[in-house]
Amino acid sequence: MPYQDFRQFLDVLRQQGELIDIDRPVALTDVGKALKQAYQKGRPAVSFNYNSTEFPLVCGLYSDRNKALLAFQSDEKSIMQKVLDGLDNPIKPVMVNGAAPCHEVVIQEEDIDLYSLPIPTYSPKDGGPYITPGIVVSKDPETGVPDIGHYRFLILSKNTVSFSAQPFHRFGKNLAKCQKMGVKPRAALIIGVDPILAYTCQVQVHDQTNDWEVAGGLRGAPIELTKCKTCDIEVPATSEFVIEFEVDMDKTVMEGPLGEYTGYYTPASLKPVAKITAITHRKKPIFQGLLTGKPITENHILKQIPFEASFLKTLKRQFPTIDQISVRASAGVSFYVVISMNQRFAGEARQVILSAMSSNIRPKWVIIVDPDIDVHSSSDVEWAMAFRTQPQKDVIIVDQIPAGPSDPSIDDPTKPRPFRTASSIGIDATRPYGKPFSEVADVPGWEDFEMPELDGR
Image 1 (cartoon, rainbow, N blue to C red):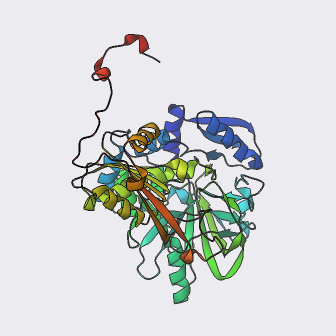
Image 2: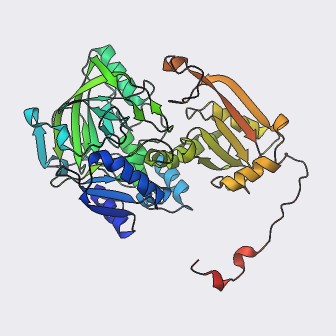
């Protein structure tokens, strides 16, 4: 059975020893330090139960791949097929009749106070307190198609925020459409949901995809929705918090800096201002935090499995003998891709490299290996690169292609985003097609050899 809500997932993490409770005061300005410590010591999720507000703050829910597997209720052997099956079988959401848990407490007008929430300033160089794990629910103003996505929100006052929405992301496109149509954009920020929704945000789909249906497919059951109080937006009925807002597209402020997924600070820049129109939450709600910055942090793990699955699904349409894909969390996920395949003809690996380079993921490094190489093993991949390649004939470099978002090494970071270009490198680390190659030196039958002395190690 899928998780019914955020709290049930927390219960599972506690049972698995993946969530620890801190029952002593921790300042919100020290949360980042505590999470960095946790990353060095097993990467558990952490609940800061005394943080100078009345709400517990839970962080690190997506801090490693094991928690991702728990979120999908899967294991490493079956995860990719489970995600692919979910993507192929979307399930429509359902509306909840009667009062929804997320509306147990409704706060509006003068009672709205963002400072009452446990929103950390993760680093002294951040532009201020940031909501980093929140999921924005918005709609295309022309078609009404809903979108969910992760966007950062800087707290400006008790009832105003600024946020960063790239123009090529769906929320950014929805905002641009609203401005063109003369419609005031309204949306909702949801915090504390079934973790599948957080992973759904990362799936690469076309703009007219109903993300609630994608989430239902991945979850294996429909998402239960309820209508917001001050805007025409539907949100998950069991959300811990819902922050409803309207955007003033004519007003901008300097937003940032914040350590981004590349591991570098993005400089402050002008961004829109949004006014909070309502905050609703469950009784005794739980807030959520998420540390961004130098890999590997939570946002890298969030992207990894959805990117791998959707990228595999796309490439296999043209190249059916592709076996596995790994996008490296340590390289910001989309910048480093390893693909294993059985070549059907000479040069096919190069075709895959060029197709990967031209995808929306925009990888900087694309490495193709044979199926005997574990794409998730750095040592396997490095072995293939060392002994199955000759750089003068197996390396492709393509210049003047669209840059990946927020890459600090691009040609001129001061250019507007649509004008930024970069280069990409592809490495064919497969054995030459149709030609003899040296035999692998290994010990056959070792998997079945009994060594009880090693049990428990």
